Image 1: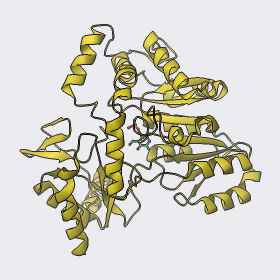
Image 2: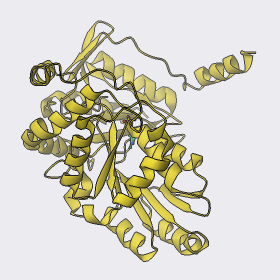
Image 3: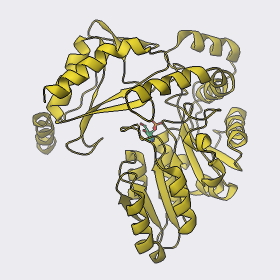
Image 4: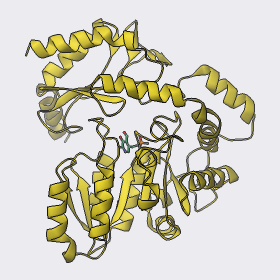
Length: 377
Ligand SMILES: Cc1ncc(COP(=O)(O)O)c(C=O)c1O
């Protein structure tokens, strides 16, 4: 009975696609400990060093005392809503100047739950081709139709809108702001122009930008001054904030609709109160203190010709990507090969993600090794 699965696994191994969980020995700040080595961690979303940070954990626990439990024991609509959830939601609504905010257990829950609820029969979604798997899964679960436009290609998006918009009731345009695997930024102002022209709801996923971009760390929409023009903004707490969970902020009508119809919100136990309290504490107390570090990290990204702190090193073949990771490992760098289906076939890559304590000189050797690998091709 399991033969078909074994066969598929063997095929994955043949194509260097097989994934396995690794036995890391530990992590602290910018380092990871693996196979007896201390390595610079270039594969973490702990962008601001708030996770794996003993001092911060201690400071939070000292201030929180025994006020928050480790389990919510219930979904939010049952008995899973304590004051701290509402406080965080209200804090985010105030920061974004939106009517209402809803917490989700993760960015995956949020993206799956939002489009599957909002896009109903007769509706349509236009989604960037490189949007995260959670956005794709949400669209697939929805009752509507969806089109995926080529990455950041506004001409194709407009052609699609021109051709298709009239055939549907509600229409949505969904994009990431900073793309998770490419580190580039969506042309959000142009998308706003199109959403207005074609009467669409615009949703942006700021998973990798929340905490990093904007004076207050609210994301690329803040940097561009367009928060009030975007219908729904999604952000996650598991990356720059160093916690767990996600939020969506927007109009009262849409958020109330999600509370009533978003299945990944309704049918899941709420994240632990202690996590919600930690997220709120970080946003209130720590995020305002790291502006300089965030700027420094983004400037370092620019030196690698990236628009953000995420630097894609596209190698192409799976095995060659795995080999480059090995070379980097032996030189003190921890990176991971990113392969299909996470990225399109033929674009396997190393995704370098910077974190704010990494210094430029620590990356000199990395640059050399990457250049050498390009020359060897
Ligand atoms: C763009 C994007 N959205 C959503 C998610 C999912 O967020 P979470 O890890 O909180 O489930 C990710 C995670 O990698 C992501 O990259």
